[in-house]
Length: 176
Ligand code: SF4
Image (tube, rainbow, N blue to C red; front, side, top):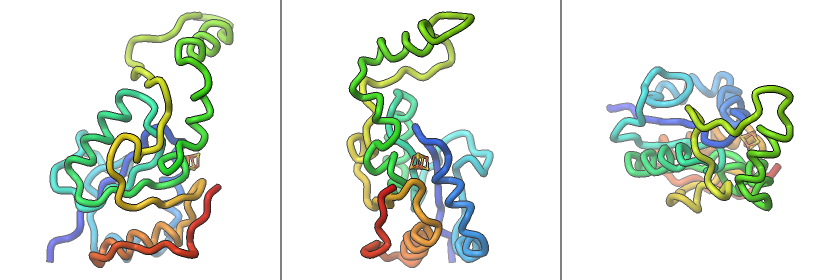
């Protein structure tokens, strides 16, 4: 039987949700018996591949690069999971939303700089006006809240998806 293909990525997040994913401990062995991780920080692929079964996406959509990756992942994946509060609600990244982007960048890179003052333009993804939850940009099939989500909630969701079922998080829901 073909293994399920899992892709993971983080957009505007702190990587804490991926740390929680690694915290599955021995649960990861059961996952890897049924699935291959074909994209993400743990593997070497440079581009989100075609034919992914389950996409686990951490972080809010804050930059043009985030948006492009989210759109590609959606187009090439059957099931998209918003992993963690930043992806589910915008959470920490959305705290900047009340401040105009230009003003925010100048505060950090000009007023707040002690040397090399100037808003960077080379090699830095353009910020969108707002940091938005994932469902603002693409269709999301499963939301897994938590900052980060508990490993047992992640295992519950991934386990159900590997068996071809949509998970019902019910009492496992927890924000923050
Ligand atoms: S939900 Fe929490 S742990 Fe996950 S990326 Fe956001 S701040 Fe980090």
